[in-house]
Image (cartoon, rainbow, N blue to C red; front, top):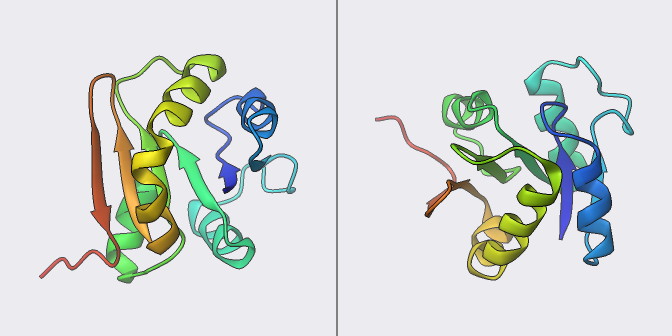
Length: 123
């Protein structure tokens, strides 16, 4: 799977995911440090990558735009050290992969995972 990791998460997460066979880059590697969330979303969509973040603003942007891409994976109420995040993501990826491929917001917490397909209709 292809991932774009937001700057609120350590770039080491990209290395852990690469070691597991995924194509993962950090926003700093892409020259997007300090970029607005909308720019990060546009780049993720262009590169067909899943955004990984702890920032709920990405979900709000998808909802406001009724967007179908890119997918977003949010970590909420979990430890944010990169090894724990990698282990948690890899343990849940098989269950989330189809949703992420088709367009979804996936929220992973300490003890559960929530999936919501895109687009999100606010009506």
